[in-house]
Image (cartoon, rainbow, N blue to C red; front, side, top):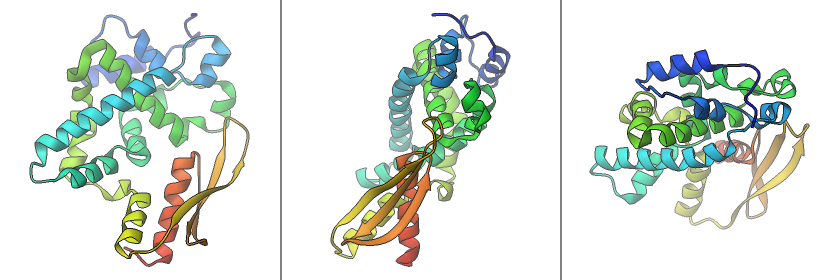
Length: 234
């Protein structure tokens, strides 16, 4: 594989130094910050496989932190806490905090259409970076980043920006002994590199909320949020 023609290695170096990480070869970190659109244009590797690995590492280490820190929580409450801090909204905050939006490499089309600010791209790259760090330095090195970026937010209960509206709506429906809650994909608009999804939440066939997003997951969360407003659920 050819290496990318342009370099973000100085930014990567600053990022690694900030979190006390040092590697002889940072090619893997550079790959983690290479979006498929850039890779296709320059015939190099992209970050999708590293994203898969990083997602699992983030889940594991966050689970371990919650388990050790909140010893009075049962399994259900630990799961809810993890879901609140390992989700698209939360990952976007983490990605921007470590500078993914500045380091990410995008293809010309993606760059021109605002890809540097797109939630899905930044979240995926954040997870990919964690995957690369895991391969280079193990769980201990990943923890160096999470200890600064993620864990303090859980500890201080900065949970409001990362509300899981879909889970909250489901819990309300179950508590009220209501019937079937379903989500439908209404439409997909935009070019392949800049999709907008529209999802709706239905209860017993009645549409309660509709939401848009750059991914189905984001659109579903927005639809659930709208449904909760209609049901006057705090």
